[in-house]
Image (cartoon, rainbow, N blue to C red; front, top):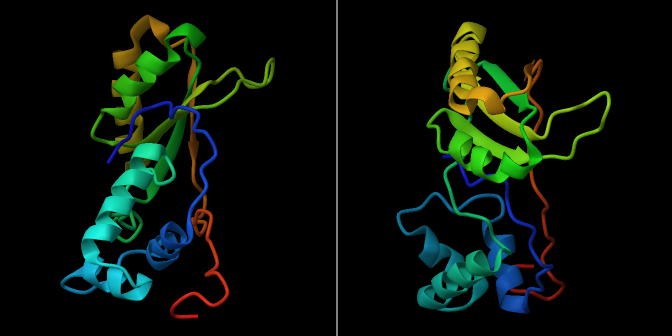
Length: 178
């Protein structure tokens, strides 16, 4: 579930009309049918093999980060959700971030700029648990992993669930299905 941390900067990508239709057809999730890629191909108007080839190419180019299951952690009983923030040496943030991101209980991990003197933290890692005590134990594991590189950290707990969606593209005028 975790991904490499921090994510490398990506060059802006342009999508041709077919790539755009694939993104529009999948951005709210894959169809819940026995053969979802066949359904996407039918919506887009190209063969399944072409859809899969284009998705892999968009992933390699960085236009799509990943295709993955996104469970609702609240519905699964994970109600203590803490964004752990860490002050680690800048020259080691990539290496340390990859190690933290590899932990099975870290759902996402990334680098963010410091805002000194008020905000010294440059590494962020989301930890989910059923209780705050469970989250605190997992944060202690991260602290042990970081060792002396941990120059300070905090855990910021969610108070409410916000609807999370990324960028959504609108279908182009005249595209199939519009």
